[in-house]
Length: 410
Image (cartoon, rainbow, N blue to C red; front, side):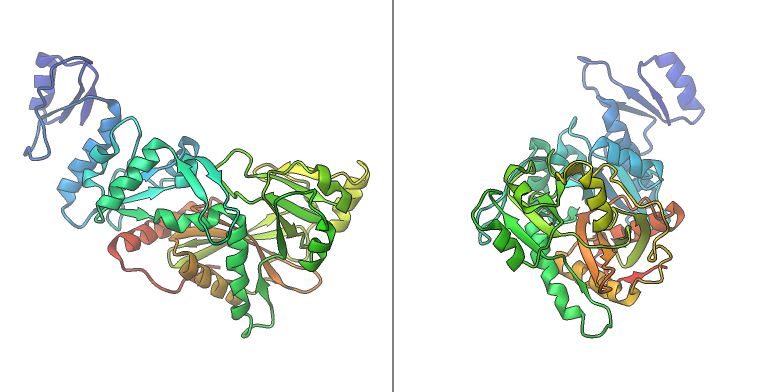
């Protein structure tokens, strides 16, 4: 294929005679005498109105050449995330070995026009959130407002069940809400009968006003001893979702600058080691990362500033212990227990690709899941291992041939 921005009949004729397929970008205002349409056999010239139409054009030609066995996957996420996946070879226009063609979707073209030949849409809808209003009652839903483009996509998929969302938009709502995730993690108690280790969520308390009476008593009733980590209830999609604090003194709450409503969460001493798990279809990957220090180290750091709350953005770095920890060699993690938890979360959340972070409490050996997120980048896993499993998970989702149990890859 040869793509040109201007059309010269004589030059183009020579290229066509040499076997080139010409795709010309039509000048604005020019008549729409399209010489190629979906039904055209062996076109020699294709006219497009915008350069953004080119991937869709290539997708159509590839799908036509490959037959019905290929599935086309449109993907929609913020540019930086898209670029990260694309650099690792996750989104090829050329069919993958298991028959997937990936096409970037854009709000510069009508969504309905782009989805006519798309079998599924891989989305990070949280990238398109405008506002999130947390409900004051556990019985009512949070109000999430998406961009117009994402709303158009949701309407289209709602009216065209043959085009599948990966994953359903309603399935991502729990990961938007740290309170709901905490409540879901409470169900992990049922997995602890078979193992010597215990897996659980952290102790927590929802707070709507840091100056509310008897807050200290409520923290104690929730088994929360200082220091605590305080997070906004909104987990992602808005600018301040990652504005957090570590609180060392109870009287620091009254002036705490963390968005409300908030979740006060147990701070777990974990030898400055975090295990990041990624569930990709029926496979589970994990990586070991340095994390925040134990409470005694944090307190020493905070004493230099009169034990004022440590404010931070969780997307940026925090102080970590540079010494090798006892858990860093991977001998302390109970892989069977975490695999059971991953499969349980997979069934409960009904998500194809998600991640969760585990820390191991020094004093008890408890495996504590401190975070759950949707469609992580899993870039700590080597691309040659992760990307084929990524394609496999998407193909299984589109064909409905999903395994109910995932297995960990060590």
